[in-house]
Length: 254
Image 1 (cartoon, one colour):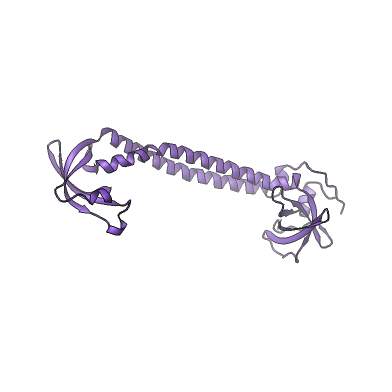
Image 2 (cartoon, helix red, strand yellow):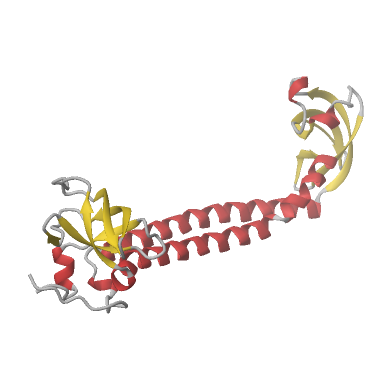
């Protein structure tokens, strides 16, 4: 076996690395799937925002009377919600509604017959909301588009980072990594799965302990009990084992 290994940076293309295209496609598929899920969630959030904005813009204030209050247990009322049963009139019609949400702390001070301010949508007069509670949440509702935009940008940045990481993980060790003769701590298992094993190598009279990753079902380039490996840039405790198929594809052995 004759070695013909150029000095770094070595001319290694992504398409020359066996299995790299498949891993890239899997990364793309996962990224696109994640973006689709995020898009569906964004669509739901957008519809909710539009509904809330429409309600707040056209709701009318109506005075109602408390017919009942449903509170959570006393020890659970901090930042909790309660529900009201209210009686009110709108455009000459009498209505009764239950399950009107409000804060538990506010509801504690409301007794039977107490007056409460409601917001009523003229198109749905039988679904009132307690005004104080609804307007208190309005600020958070108006932040939704901004939060959605930041989330979308974050997801896109994460996807691009993962794509870049995949590209680098496949090519950079071969292009820029130092090539070393690695001594595994024990015999490599016979398996068709990816193998990760502890090993050591010497460089400039210093012994380095690393974790090595070998491609599944491939015979590594050997020299006695040692195997050829490339040190992963920026992760000096990880190395990538160079198998014979890869070395021949790159023209490193003849």
